Image 1 (cartoon, helix red, strand yellow):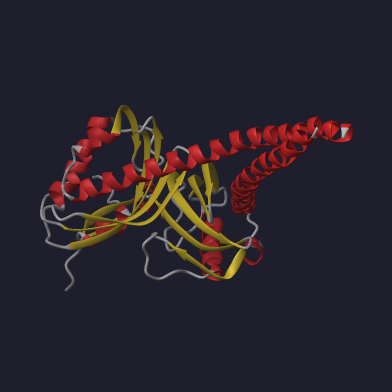
Image 2: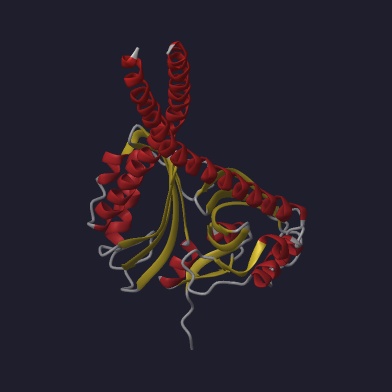
Length: 180
Length: 180
C-alpha cells in the first residue's frame, strides 16, 4: 500500500502543472476579451455620434468629446479645431443642407481607435459659407479616424472628398488668377 | 490505507476537469493569436507597399493586389479601378512627383483590414492631370483602407485631400462659368 502514497504527490504535481498552464493562458485570453469589450463600447459610442449628427443633436460634443479633443481635417492639418469649433462647423452644414445625412457602411474598432467610412448626402437648399443655394444634390465619401480614451473621443482625423463636393455644388478648378 | 486509494480517482477527475477547461480556453486563445498574427502579416505587406512606392516601384501594385481587386478612389466611387488602373494611377503620381515620399502617420490592422493615415510629399516635376510641372512642393494627407485575403489586397478605398493638393499646384475653386 505504501507505493500508492508515492503516486499521490506525483498526481498532484501533474494537476498543478495543468492549472499553471491554464492560469497563464487564462490571463492572456482575459486580456484579449477585455480589449474586445472596450472596442465594442468604443464602436457603440461612435455609432451614437453618427446618429446624433443625423438627428441634429449638438449635445454630443459636451457629452461624448473630451475637453482636449482636436479635429484634424484634412487629416494632416497642423492645426486642430476644438470640439466647440467643430460643433460650429456642423451647424453650418445642418443649416445649409437641411436634409444632410451620413451613412456609415464600414466601422472598424481596434485598440483605442474607431475608424469609419462614411457616405454623406444632402441637398443645397440654403446658403452655405457664402455659396448661394443651388438646389444641387451631392454625395461624397470620406474616412473618420477617432481615438477614444476613458469613454471620450479625444482626437479625430478626417479626409473627405471636398473637391468632389464643391464640384457638385457648382464650383470648378481653375488656374489661380495672377495677383495684381 | 484503502481511503487513500479512493482519493486517487478523485484527483484524476480534478486533473481531467482542469485539462478540459484548458482545451476550450486554449482553442479560443489560439483563435485570437492567429488573428493577431494575420494582422501583423497584413501590416508588413502595407509597409512593403509604401516602401516600394517610395522607391518609385509602381509594379509592386501588381504583386500585392489581387488580379480581381476593386480599388475605390475616391472612397465613395461607384466605378472601382482594376489592378491595371491602379498600377497606371500609381505610375501617374510617380511621373508627376518623382521624389514622392509617403510617411505612414497611423497604421491600424483589424481582422482582414488595414487602415493607414499617410502624409505624401513630393515635387511637382511632371504633368499631373493636365497641370504642367510647377516645381511646387506639395504635401497631402491620404487615408486608405485595404481588405486582405490570402495575403493579397482584394479591395482598396482611398481618400486624399485632392482640393488641398490642387491648390498647392496653383489651382483654385471658382463658380463654374455658364457655357455660352
